[in-house]
Length: 154
Image (cartoon, rainbow, N blue to C red):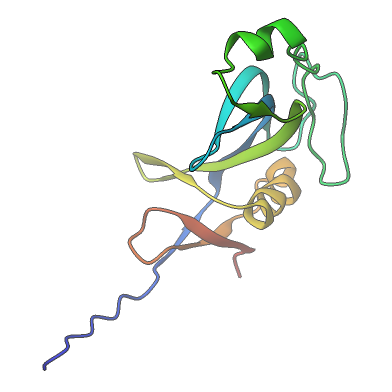
């Protein structure tokens, strides 16, 4: 048997045109337990877009221990709302509040602008560099569809 192995390398981009966002989300969810496959139902959510570490309009709490701001909590689902989605013979869990964050970076090289998913570490590097517009070297993921790392350019 012949196996082909293709190695892709990561590429880097240096730019001084960038901004990072972190979309913070609170979501209430309930697990409906039904054999053989339990399922989750989501109820109300609230969102807040953090940009470059600055306090966004509408922020209720923050900054937290990761420097992120959060919107007000969404309303907790009532017993009636939970029961309304319940099927016969299903057990239900207590409502659970999920906190999620979706990180993105937008950067420009020449006239081209690109927005890609990223991670907390890249977001924090942008937050630190943004006020002075220090050029950053961005390391792109294998297919160029994510930004894996950001460092101050030499």
